[in-house]
Length: 218
Image: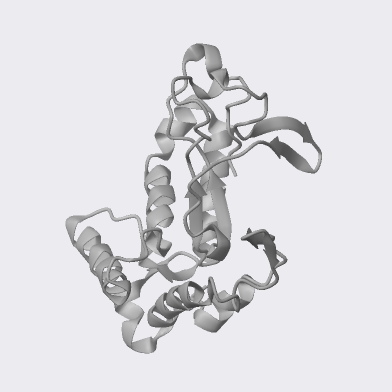
């Protein structure tokens, strides 16, 4: 799917709950705090959807065409083409969108290219990663991630913080999915992204890998 800006904006009217200055935001696409940033992202979608930018911004794969942010370069030439597309996008916002569409997409694509590493640890989770990469690519999603644990006491690890549910973690599982409790920080772009990838950049010690600080995959 190669969506345009209007189609992207419509995806944000999905019932998301956002608060600012103690008040609930009814529509992030029209709120004065956010509408300009939303339209900056929409401009990127319009640029990729323009017929004149088809070869620059998209590539062919087995199921159709996708944005080059999801391309998996297997040669120097492919890597250069991908970079040219990303540079063209960056020129539109002059680097002021630090968590633009290519940021987390590149992270997920890189993880997919190293799928064998994940499969060696857990084949089922590796398959989930592969499925999610294809889902995000095929639906032209804008992803962001949230990667920092609350820093209530910087002298202690996540598992040593006061409050059992300070850091986001899985507290229950059932047929409907996961129940998550706790917080994560630094979800730049979260109010205008389609999905948030919940993860962690803090290496966990063997004694803490299965504690409450273990984050869900999504």
